[in-house]
Length: 168
Image 1 (tube, rainbow, N blue to C red):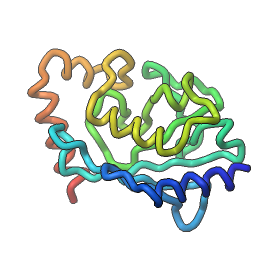
Image 2: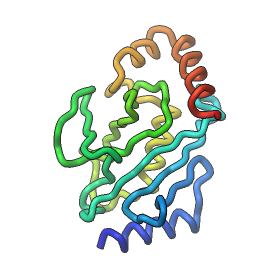
Image 3: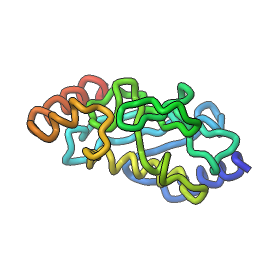
C-alpha cells in the first residue's frame, strides 16, 4: 500500500510541479526522498537552495515521513522519543523552527497528521514555515528571541547563513 500511495503522489507532483520546490526519490528508492526548496522571495532565505531528506515507513500514509537519522521528534526543543518522526534539513539554516542538526517540527507531521495528508501538503507547509516562522513553537529559543527583539539582526544573520550554506 505504501509504495503505491507514494508512487501516486510522485506522479501528482510531476503532473503539476510547484514553483518553490522539487522532490523525488533518491536513487529510485521510493521510501527515501530528497526535496529541494528555493528560499522564499522577500525573506532572508531568498536565493538560497535548501535540501531536505524525507523517509517513509512501510506504514505510510498511516504514519508520516520519518527523519533520515531515525527518530527525531521534537516538541518545544525536547526529544520526545515517540514513533512519529520528522523530515530533516540537510542544508544548514538559521531559523527558529529548525534545529542546528536540521530537525523540524511541523504540526502536520504530528498532531495534525492523518492518512489524507499528502507529501505535497507537507512540502508546502515547509515552504510556508520558511516564509513565516512559527514563534509560538520555536525549537531554537535564542533565534526566536532574536527574531522578536532584534528583527534586523535576525534577518542579517539568516542572510549570512543563507549565503554561506545555501548558495554555493
